[in-house]
Amino acid sequence: IWTALALWKGWQMGIVLFVLVGLGSFVLISRALARRIEPRFQTIQKQIQANQIPLAMKEIEGLMPLGRWQILLEVQLHAQLGMLSYATNDLPRAKKHLAQAGYRATEAQLAYAALLYRSNRWPKAREVLDFAIRANKKQILPYHVYAWLLLKEGDRNGASDKLLACQKSEPGNESTQENLSRLQNGKDVSMKRFGVIWYGLQLERPPKQM
Image (cartoon, rainbow, N blue to C red):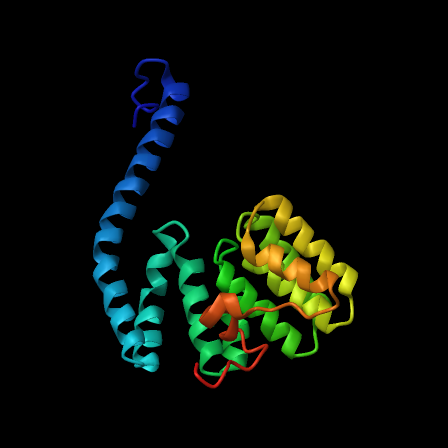
């Protein structure tokens, strides 16, 4: 409209105004949607806590059409669907959604790598782990999972290298120091410190008390 009416600075200012109005409108729409979505996320959380997984997944799927209007919502929903599918051993469905999860969804990326490893796709699992570490350098769990898998594949030096990289990224972390010490003494990497998050990857059986 600004350009058609040949107002001040003509089409150049028309483009600037178009960008500003477009961005402003998108922000307002996103905020309005966030207020609508939040109660539904709370409902999903309660359903998960009550072990009503099918209901929770159906609710998450119902939010998918809103993904085009809310930044990062769609990849977050894929991460949640993938994690729930993985937890309930629906591996084909888990693979579909975890592959589309956001790169910042660390647990989803680790679940995807674990699924690939369990499916005898170790090279692809390594790619996912490398990507997860690059995207989340300050999170120590991806390094430890990678080290555990490398040790499982007989690469003790590679496992040590991953933990040394973790120590460089997060100096002074007790879990990293402990596992480095274990490797240096010829022992296996211990993942007990990571608790439910680790055992949820289904790479190792949890203790009976869990």
